[in-house]
Amino acid sequence: MTSPPHTPSAASAPAASPSAAGSRAGAPLTWLYAPGDRPRVVAKALGCGADVVVVDLEDAVAPDRKEYARAATAALLADPQPVPVHVRINALDGPLAEADLRALARLPGVAGLRLPKVGGPGQIVRVAERTVAASGRVPPLYALLESALGIEYAHAIATAHGAVRGIALGEADLRGDLGIRDDAGLDWPRSRVVVAARAAGLPPPAQSVHPDIRDLDGLAASCAHGRALGFLGRAAIHPRQLPVIERAYLPTAAEIEDAEAVIEAAAARPGAQALPDGRFIDAAAVTAAHRTLDLARRRRRPPPT
Image (cartoon, rainbow, N blue to C red; front, side, top):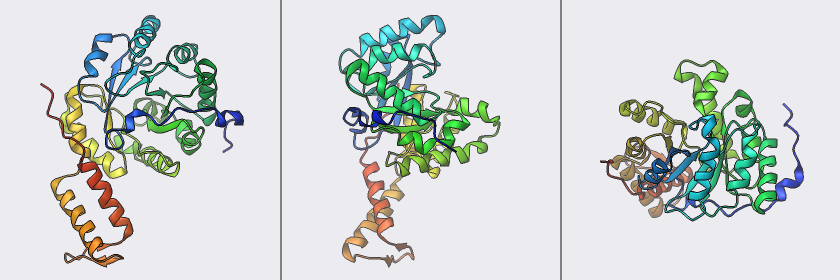
């Protein structure tokens, strides 16, 4: 399949420094969405302990509230915030995205822009061109893949511009596009996005939201499955989901103990070897053990009251 045409010169456009979202002892684990037309909800979200707050101007905002949501978000993000704030702008092929970019791209409180329904690398390049024209810089960009076309172009999207800091799935729209009713039908697109992110040198993707905020057991089980597929962390739509996501993605005591044993054995005798319990370890196992311990250093949050 031939990639959609795009402007090569945009690849050299100035990009922002890496997003503050990655500064908390590694990649974020929790991304909390809040509707842009409800400033009080956004303010509350900033104090909930999420690694990143995502102000949503797209699906969470009714058409007649779009302009108000943009103005309220711009007012909030005129100043730096206590946690990284991303903004999910409106559809890239619609009339609202241009105004969103003009209003938000230059603001000091914007740690990243989340781009919905990305279908090809050309859309990323055009966003980069628009933000350079509006502000002289390109904020960190995060592409949401929500269609069959987006999945097909996953790696091309991930490498379309130096400002791309991550890719992720939008599973609700993807289900509709593919006609998927059973959750297992999403496993191949999920793995495709995990592999594309890794191949592009990006952090592992975060899982898409779990829409039932009361189903915490189902959320935990879904996170365990996502972790097994290679995801890291998850988007949330309610603060009560945050501790469940974090517990699911932080290593258990047994995993930490195993990782420490691997690293200790490798330090004592470099090279491939078998541990006393019969496990074979090599350089890849040591790398995985270090990754486990890095995650273990993350703070554990108390449940929200």
